[in-house]
Image (cartoon, rainbow, N blue to C red; front, side, top):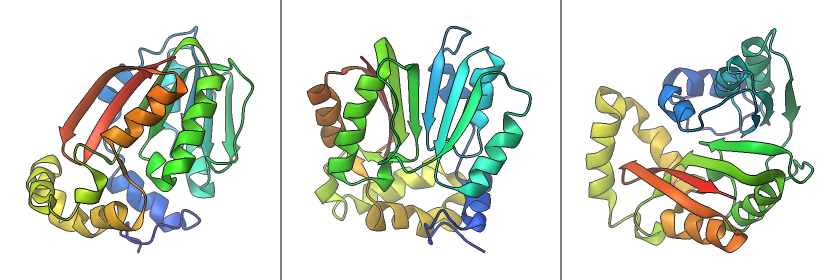
Length: 219
């Protein structure tokens, strides 16, 4: 059984483990967008489609992108009966859309799969895809301290993680550090640079732990 330490999204077991253990509640995150019937919503790394279904219930037109066949199957089930919904199998590096296609874009727990250069390239593309005044929200392992200071901040990470994950922290520790050291997280300075350089205005940053941030930006 995959426990989050083997990060090949072709494995059905990884999708099952993530949805059960790491996806978390999306009600608060969805509320940040204020979805309505006038929205064209893009969710990059849409997972099981929960956020898309929430947007569709508000009458929004929704598009989801994911590389996992298992997650796309879950998303199809979540969106069954929804009007104006589409799902695309693609990497975040390869997917593309016409300019001014969306009003709101989400990237939740997916951008850490990209290199620093790829993060900048994707954010630049999103800026083109969004309509003027459009909103981008990124939630991920975005460190509040410099990325190269991971080791010296390990005691702070352990302290925050014990609070953030509660009793589940011992079971999640290996998967957490797989993401921190074997995948490609960034820090707030790096992400802010990409957003500002591309032309976004950063509206709000929320960091409930030193290793997790939600960044809201406007075109």
